[in-house]
Image (cartoon, rainbow, N blue to C red):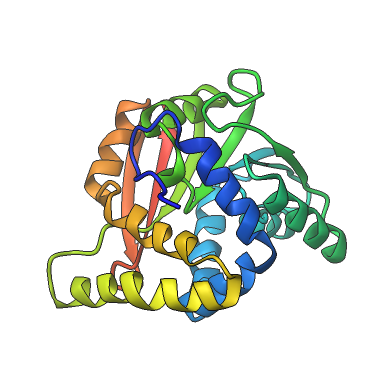
Length: 239
């Protein structure tokens, strides 16, 4: 199966949603394995940034199996935390995790390009490693801004394209060879774990994503690289 690249691709959403539904049962295990567990710390940094202003209502977009949504709820139990995703099987895994951990998060199936919420209805919004899967990144960012109150924090975790140096060559080799091999063996879906690194290579650089967030209506946008550029954390404020 051929999966569409990152960017603007109107038919991308259903194809990618179906892919995530297929790999949902082993998705968390492979995340820990392929990142050597470092992804947990990346998310912890995102949680600290998102909760810095003590928000009352938080939305986690492209929540997947709800890793970040559950971390947000655990860190701030008094906040209402809602997670949305377009892959129902991923949400089902997240709901099971929420029950096991005794955390009251609401997980809904929804399209990030048409969020089912009123304008200015959230104090903070997060998205972790899901933005590059949007069929239209600019529209997704505009929807994120629409549902946020002025002054609310947006926090985006994403994998930047590997740089054109020795470290970047190593990352590309890992993504093109190691990830599809291990991902295929564990999940039974090699194409999914070939798509994921390919979507990273085709996505925006941190500077470009910063500019896209600003164009969508976010101010004070800053980013910092995590683990020598493997991941990047973007933080902004709704203007």
